[in-house]
Length: 74
Image (cartoon, rainbow, N blue to C red):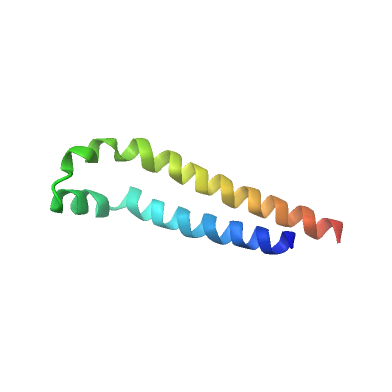
């Protein structure tokens, strides 16, 4: 059961980090926010996206560490 949890956590971390990295490194959100009239929020995107990216990277690291621990026990 722990292996399934680790796999799900790893998958969530990788997908979340990928989406967050795309939003950080490309102007996708800037263009989208400008198109819907929320361009005033663009200045605050870094305050949300970078901690979110760090959270997903830490999630990946924890899942890999946990997976390594369970394989060492076997």
